[in-house]
Length: 206
Image 1 (cartoon, rainbow, N blue to C red):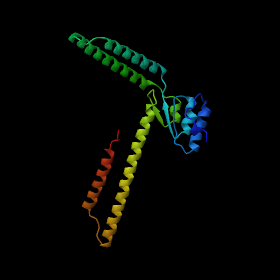
Image 2 (tube, rainbow, N blue to C red; image 1 turned 90 degrees about the vertical axis):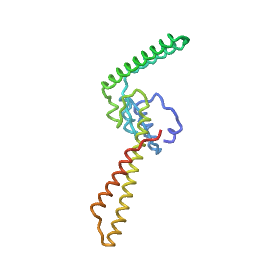
Image 3 (tube, rainbow, N blue to C red; image 1 turned 180 degrees about the vertical axis):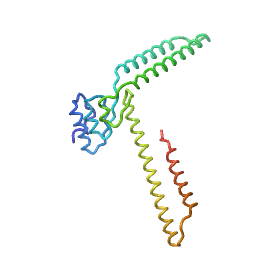
Image 4 (tube, one colour; image 1 turned 135 degrees about the vertical axis):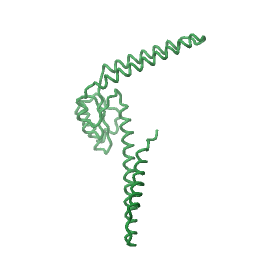
């Protein structure tokens, strides 16, 4: 519990050791996020406050690397060529279009293969599952979680203000022996619905 916050990197850990590290951070009143891709991460994924399972696909990773290497080689070849004549510029444009088409085709193929990848054991233990082959999903989960929290707080604020206004209005009207009419209740309901609609239209800051 006291030693874990002083360490920056934990490497070469067994499944029980991973779970123990996450439990130690939890005991230290830290918010933990665990990201894993196999059965050896199930215990730590359950212990963490937020668990994200990544579907590991080594074959797709190799395809991505090969495609990236091809793109780098093509860019190097294009940078070596001179752009003095119009013919060379036309060739460059055609080469760029061919590269874009090949990249789009490769992305579509890999996306189709990702959709066909089966979920692993880690996805059963974690509440979130990502089909991406990087830890970028952790950032997405944090951003979406913050947006959800802000939206829920705004909704509770609107509900609280609505209850207070209704209580004050009904108390004042009861003191004068007057009741709200159908039109007043309809207008009040429309205003509250508009407030909720504006909250749903909110967008997160960059």
